[in-house]
Length: 313
Image (cartoon, rainbow, N blue to C red):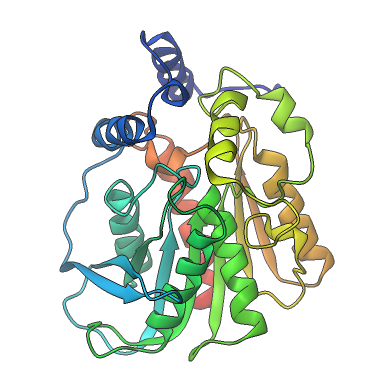
């Protein structure tokens, strides 16, 4: 298999996207780009599907502002157990809990666990590390088992994708250093932007033509103003020792691929149990493309199965 092998369903989708006329997202005002991403999400991902619970709540942030969270559960009632806290991607400026609702609903069904998706504050109105601080506050809130939340956490499973994967790692670090009311049992990172300080080969190799490209990543950074020396936006600037067991998923045709590989390697070197999975012939953000890239569903399911083994051996 060649290094740049692309699956047929991936190639068909990427070719269609690259051929679309009109301006690219990074050439648009952010509110317009966000509306387009929300609309396109309905076309690229599967429906939310059946759930017993789909409810929204408000969480107090560290600065007193309200953070929106959305609970997904396949069961109407359950006893105490692990609760998933999910941090979405979107380059710090474009994602939200509605866009990622199908992902969270599927996660709730496949893991048979409640999933709390965090609508952290977005740039450019709130530059980093505001979003990560919201993620930490929301995780601590879930761990505290507030009366308003109809599930009881005995532990947390932190999950995130892309920049949300970085927020997930940073939140795991914060909860390691100052534990929440319940422990973090495991972490699952999908193609995380784990190390902004290093220019890896994959960034150059897949700089254009694979949807996530150098132009949109530059646009994300200009608006969010990440600090690559601060673990809250570039988590490998921090110490990975003592983090919970991990599943780290990368995509072979992703500019961020080598950041995820480096994070998994750093965990292993630090003695943290880690399962590294790489989706061959796959692009960034594939868990949100399961309608248009049907094979992505298998990669998603494989990652969820791996994290389930960590928390339910």
